[in-house]
Image (cartoon, rainbow, N blue to C red; front, side, top):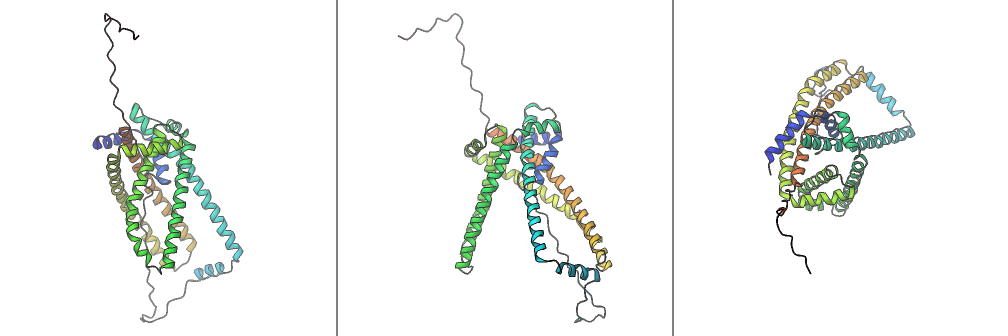
Length: 335
């Protein structure tokens, strides 16, 4: 399998088709080929120093603004907290629907745009790329509903079984499940590989939803080791570039939040709401930059997968039958 040629052609598609960058960004924001990048978390421990310098001095009280803010939270009635929880649940469901709809148009558009670029070589616009993928919208939505619903049911079953084993064996049974958890890592990766090929079958070959699952399984079986090697290669590229993006996030976050935290310490908790708003805006800007970089990576990876799938399903041209010469005698008819 020409891995180097596939990666090189994917790079050419990435550079030429800038309209795909938008759909790669949307795909990365909603999951992408390999999921979102796990951003590092930071736990800033701010020590408190007593004024009199005594080692055993009691801790200093909270600033007045912070105490008033906490006292207001304690006066909120329980039914208000219930309404707040229901409101957050509604927002979460609405966000899940938005993510599903965006991904239903972003992934097929990205795949079809890369496919058309590989076939024709012409530069596409955003409108042309969108037109390529919109007719696969409902099939892609159904695909993600089936996959997400199946994953949710499987996760609930694993949680229920693990909880039951932990309760009946006082936690000792979980030690026996560690080898199964280690085996689940490559198994999950292979399932993701199969789902990627299934989505490619749906968009590249224009198949119905259920037929795409059977076609994906057929392509994976007939090209198993080539698909595994291609998946490992793209996974390494994803991890390497993802690590670089994470380093960029840290480089941008430390000089941004360092002075902000120092400013908060100097204010001793005053104007806490203003500091929270500023910190949220800075964090949103950093996440937007990282998502844009991840979108570029997603565009390249998906282009490589399209080219790999075309190689998996390529059939050699059938040899044309030789035509008989003009002066040849006709074949005798069968009795």
